Image 1 (tube, rainbow, N blue to C red):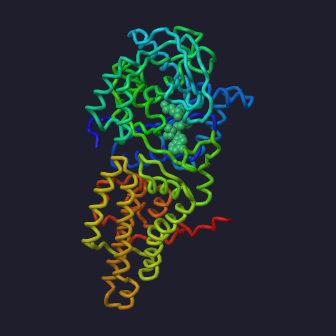
Image 2: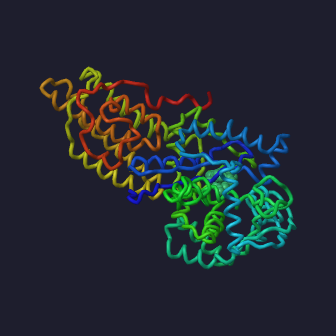
Image 3: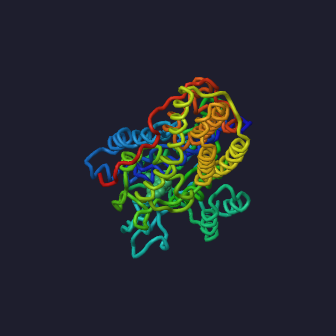
Amino acid sequence: MSDTGKSFYLTTPIYYVNDAPHIGHAYTTVAGDLLTRWHRQRGESVWFLTGTDEHGQKVMRTAEANNTAPQQWCDRLVEQEWKPVWKHLEIANDDFIRTTEARHTKRVQKFLQGLMEQGYIYEGKYEGPYCVGCEEFKLPGDLIEGNCKIHSKPVEMLSETNWFFKLSEFAAPLLEHYKKNPESCQPESARNEVISFLEGGVSDLSVSRSTFDWGVRVPWDEKQVVYVWFDALLNYATAVGLTDDPSSDGGKFFEKTWPADVHLVGKDILRFHAVIWPAMLMAAKLALPKKVFAHGWLLVGGEKMSKSKLTGIAPSDITDHFGVDAFRYYFMRAIPFGSDGSFSWEDMAARYTSELANDFGNLASRLAAMVEKYCDGILPNPAKDEELASALSKTVESADKAIVALDFQGGINAIMDFCKVVNGYVTIQQPWVVAKDESKKSELDAILYNTAESLRALAILLHPVMPLSTSKLWSYLGAESSLGPISSQKIADVAKWGQLKGGSKIIKGDILFPRLPDLES
Ligand code: MSP
C-alpha cells in the first residue's frame, strides 16, 4: 500500500473512434477495471483513466466517408457507442479523456512548446511510407510487398516538411533504463522486443503533419498539426494536469498521480509506449511510467481480431447470452495476460457451466436453501473450521500476489480453487444428513455458518472480477447491513474469520448464473 499519498494510477490506451468498441478493446479495459478495483479494495487511492483518440487521418477519413464533420462524428461515437459500452461492462473509470477536449489540446501545445525551447524539436523533411490504419511512419522491414503487415493494406508514400523530435538521442538512455528496471516493461518477451529494437538504433521522429488539419495545431506553425501519436500519448499526463503550475489544483493533482503505475497496452502498440513515450518524458525531465504491460491479442482464425478485417465481435453479442459478469470472468480467467488467445463459444459455455454456475452459483444457492430449510432463513452464530480458515488465508495471499503482478488468470484460479475447497467441505460434511439428527443441531449450525463465511470471502475476492453477481450475493448473505458495502471490504481483512453476524437474514435470491439457453436459440 502506498504511504506517500501517491495514487495508484492506471491507464488503458485511448481508443480510435473510427468505429464502435469490439471485444479486443473491452479486453484491455476490463483488465484495467479488474486491477484498479483490486487496488481500491487494498485500500489504496486509485486513479483509473480511459478515453478516446480522436485526431488524425484514420478518424478524419472515416468521418468523411460517413459525410459527417470529424468533431460531430467523434461526439456521436463517444456518447452513443464507447461510453455506453463501458457502462454496460461495469467499468468504474475515474476519468474519461477525449483528445479533442481543450484541457488536452492546450497542454499538448504547452508541452511541445517546452520541447522546442529545450532544443529537442527541429524542422526537417520526411520521406517514406505511412500506414493510416496504424497511424505510423513505417520502416522497410514493416512491410510485405508494399502492404502494412498489420492491416494487409497498401501504405501511402509521404514527402513533407515537418517538425522532428530528437528521438535518436534517447535510445541509449532508454536501453539503460530497461536493463536497470526490468519491471518497467513486461512481460519479459515484450521487454526483449523493445531492447532489441533499441539496440538496432532509432531515428528521429516526425511529430507534425501538414497535409490535413484534423489535429492539435503546432503552436508556432499554424500550417501543421501535431502527429496523432504524439498527441495521443500525452493524454496519460494531460488528463492529470501536465504542465500546470505546481501550486495550482492541476499541478497538485499531477504531483499526486504522476508517474503512471501501469500503462496497459496491446502488444501492437508497445513500441509507441516503450520507446517514443518515455523518450518524450525524458526530454521533458519527467518521471517515467513504472510499468508498461503489453497483453496479447484476441484472435479470430489465428489473426488479431479487428473491425477493419470484419472479424470484430461486439461485447453485447456475448453479454446478451452470458451476462456481463461471465464476460469479464471468461477473458481474465481463460487467457494468460500477456499471451494471445482465441475466443470460442464452446469454451466459454463450458467454463460458464462448470466454474460459474456449478462451482460458485450453486454453492450460494445451496447455502441459502439450507439456511431457509433448517434455520428459517436466519444465519446461525459464528463457528470456525480451521482448515477452511487456513485455506482462505493462503488463497488471499496467493491471489493478491498474482493480481498485483497482473497475473489475472493465476489470481482467479487461486480464488476458484478455494471455491472448490468449500464445495468439498459441504460434500464431506453432508449437512442434509446431519440435519436429520436433532442432537446434532450445533454441528449443522457450524457447517452452515462456515459455508456462509466462505461465501462472504468469495464475494469480496471475486468482486473486482464480477461486480454484479457478487453484489447480489453480498445482499443475499445479509452482509450489507452489518459489514457495509462490498466495494469497501478490504483484501487484507478478508481472511479474518467470523465477520458475518449470526442472526442475519439470508435471502434466497435470484440464481447467480442461470442455466444457459441453447446456443442455437
Ligand atoms: N489509438 C491508439 C492507442 C493510443 S494510446 C495513446 C490505438 N487504438 S485502437 O483502438 O486501435 O486500439 C487500442 C487497443 O485496443 C490496442 O492496443 C489493444 O489494447 C486493444 N485491441 C484492439 N484489438 C485487439 C485484439 N484483437 N485483441 C486484444 N486487444 C486488442 O491503437
